[in-house]
Length: 178
Image (cartoon, rainbow, N blue to C red; front, side, top):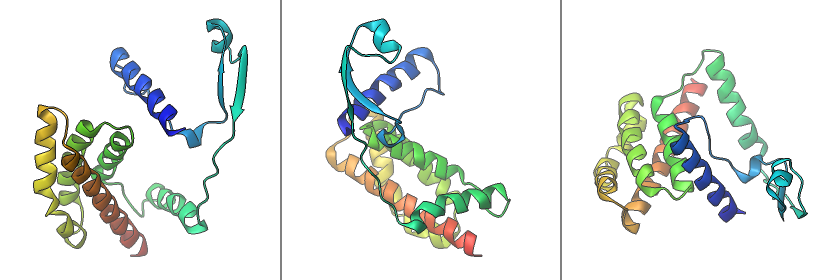
């Protein structure tokens, strides 16, 4: 399923760029109402009918109650004015999307600007552990401007995005507790 999702997202990315439509978004298998594998003629398939198809079972995703409620609690806090969103959080989400889609060059560039934004936005107790990431993220972003990343640079970007995500979550949790 992961390969199919990646391929579909490549098509959507190509459409987004070709059409100049920033609102054409990537998809996740978990969001699909139903997944069918089949074939048919153009009009038939476009109308959701197939000459032959099988419905693939959905992969259940189990989360603990606290994990399931945390995003809703944060949303309520933001909408209620008790918390605010950071620019770096949105940039991190874009970097994570690029990593998941296998777009390491784009991820490196997003990670660089996300890091700079978070360093400016986070309280020092959450930002300080991120400062040592600057050199490796900048190196990867500069390499991305020249072409594909080395496996080491791609891994460094993925690790940096994970660390930044953890720091942003800790900051949001601390803000919610305060």
